[in-house]
Length: 580
Image (cartoon, rainbow, N blue to C red; front, top):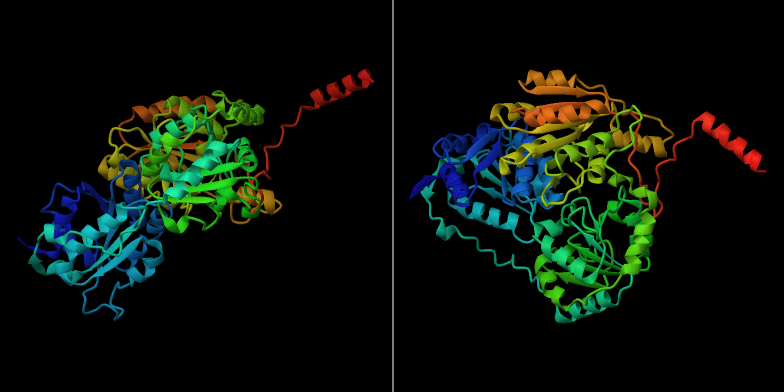
C-alpha cells in the first residue's frame, strides 16, 4: 500500500484507536490536514489556541485512559503547545503532539516559522522525535504511542517535516512495530524488599497510606481499598489521588499537604510508618523535608525508579506497577487492629470537620465554599470536574467530595492557569454522557476563554463555574499573609462574563447571592449548550488551612475564629464580673 506521509499519519492514528484530535492548521502541517478529509472516522476539533489544544488532549487522556492527540504547525504553533506539554509531563498524562516542520532542506537555516521544537521540548517530554523521512513516520508514531502510555505515562512530541508528509512510500503497519531494546526497565522488586515491607507494615502502630495519582493510573482503586480495610490503615490523598478511595469511606482522611486537612497533616507528622503509593513527595505535600514525618519509616511504591529516594529517603523502595505490587503484598499483610490510632485521628478532627456539613453558614455573603459545596449537592457528587489553578482549585478539593475515580481533572505539578475550560472540553469528548463542569477563577478563565468558541462550534455541553473574586486570588492570599496586604498587580478587572458567553452564542448567568446558586446550577444542567455562570463571591476570602512554603507540615495557618458581636462581648464581660 503506497501512501503519502500525510496519509500514513492518519492510517496510524486510526490503527491506534484514535477517534478525536485537537488541532490548529498552518503551513507546514497542511499536507496532513489535506489528507485528513479522506479519513472522516477521526473527528478533528478546531481549537482557538494551540495551548488549548494540548490541554484538551490532556483532559481527554485523563478522562478516557487513552492517549490524547493534538496537532499544530511549526514555529509559533509548536511553541504555543509548550505549556500544555509541560502540564502533561508533570502530571504523567499520555498525550502525543504531532507538529509540522519546515522542509528538511531548510532545517537549521532559520526558515519562516522554523523553531527547533524538539530542542525546546526535550526537558518536558517523555521522548520526542524529528522525522525527516517518510519511511520513518509509521514506526515513529507507533513508538510514540507506546512510550506515551507505557510505564509512567507522559507526553511525546513528533515533529514531521513538510516534505516527509508530501513524499510517498510503502505503508506496512506490522513491520513498523516498536523495537525499543533500551526501553525495557526491570520493574520487579527483590523478594527481600517485599519481606522488609511486610515486616514494617505488620509491626506498625500508627501507619498512614499516602495515596497518589499512581493509584488511578495503575487502576489500583479496589486493591487499595482492600489493603486499607484488611490492615486497618487510614488513607491520606494527594490532590491528584482524589477519587482513588471514595471520599465517604471511613478510612479516607482527606487531602494532605499545603491546603490539606489539619488532622491529616498532624497524623502524618505523628505516624510511625508512611506507605507512599504512587506519589512523588511533591514539596506541596511535604513542606519542610527536614521535619517531615520525623518518627516514621517510609515504604515507597513507584513505577518510575527515578522518583525513589529523590526527595524522601525510603526505608523500603518497591519499584513496579502499583496495582501489581499491592496484589502481591495484600495476601501476606496481617489483619490489622488499629482502632486506637484511628480514634486518635478522629479526635484530632474535632470541630474542624465542618466540610462534612452540607449547609454551610449563610451570613448574606456569597463564598466560594458555598458555591462548590452546593455544586456538589446539586450534581449529587456525580459530575466530572475540571479545574484551573488557584484558590478555587483548593476549595474544590476540599468541598466537592469524589466517591468515584477519574472525576477530578486538575493541573497539579505545573499549576497551569487556563487548564480548566479546555481540559473540560477534552474530557467531554472522552465522556460524552457525563455531566462536565469546569471550575475556574476569573484570572485563569481569561487565559483560555477563547475556547468558548470551540465549545460553541462543536456544539458541546460543558458547564463553566467562574469563581469571580476580582483578584488573582491565591497570589492575593500570599500577599495578605506574607507581604502585609500589599496587593501588587492582583486586583483584576474582568469583562462581563455573561455578555462574553452570549457573544459566543452561549448562555451566561450571574449569581451574587447564595439563594440564586441552586437555580443557576439547575438552569445550566437543563440548558443544551455550554453555560457560563459568573459567581460573584467574597473578594478577600482565603483557603485554610495553609502550610507556608517550606514550613513544617504541622505548622499551619488556621482560619481565624470569628469575632463576637459587641453586645455579646459586653454581655460575656458582665457575666464574668458577676461571677467574680
